[in-house]
Image 1: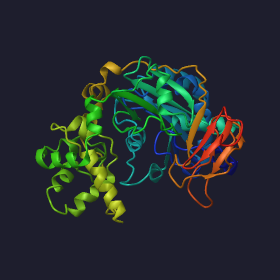
Image 2: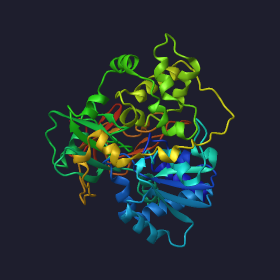
Image 3: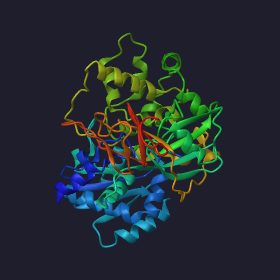
Image 4: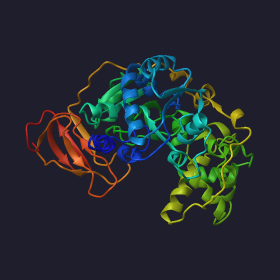
Length: 445
């Protein structure tokens, strides 16, 4: 039974829908005491998960029960914010009499950080550089569970749910075929003219600027936020790294606020961003200090809330971390058991304060789930939209495919995920993407 469920998940091409896209069939193939559903959705403006937990609560619970069976977990816990009352009411109807608890989180950032969620729910601290399984827990995303429930009904992953918000006439949450262009999805919100605008893929804190609005949405796309190019948030995200480093060297006053508010530091992890900033003034840095960057989650609390000088420890941490990895340097090991900071409960970042600091209050509007079955003419489905190796095409140029058909598979003996056609049509290109055109009748014509 366990192996059958894992194969269903694997064959359906399910990956973590709310993060980096780790293949779910690998993640759940473990023994765990608890399965925690991360429904915190703590990034401002994103409204996907809270609506799925309300409108599709039955399928979310069904997916959770499947993961509990696979892992042998004694309890499932759905962690979401108290302000998501409609979702709580819906979930309570489908969890009655089951070994599933609803855990109410406070409205703070980053409540949805995987390790923060585990501590809030279980008061267990995930070791530095470790995963929740180290403390007997599997954490999964809301839409991932929905995809598992769909897979049990014979439907592979072909679509993704995402929120379109920001400077758009009609914010909405919508289900679209994977491979639809960013520009096309944003147009569904009434914003077809993107001149003078920039788009963030993901939340305002951890999301990245979209370099080309013709690029496709993937299995992990959860939000598209449209803001003016002159918006301070966009200016900060597009600042050259050289400028960020130069400003840090000149303006960091070593106030330690970035450390005091760092969520991982407050969990007892060995990371002190202010010391990393200080090390920039040394030719080679301080080796042990630089290794602290391995424990940075890059949540952005240090730059958007903590720093009075508007510097970016997050960007600097990320750059140093990547350089260390490229040079084969690993973090220092430790047998110490982290202890949460005594002031942790008093240093949470209220979401409302974060919205004000980010300049997003005027865009804090409802983005209701649209009852719209959108069908693009063309989709560009990336062969790499997950952690692991790119998938290997199983189709040929000119081949006619149906929605849901396998078009690329996991390379042999590799970490990866299957990919399925998100629309019916003809394969007109095979490169780093598989392009399907619903109007073509065959060949690359």
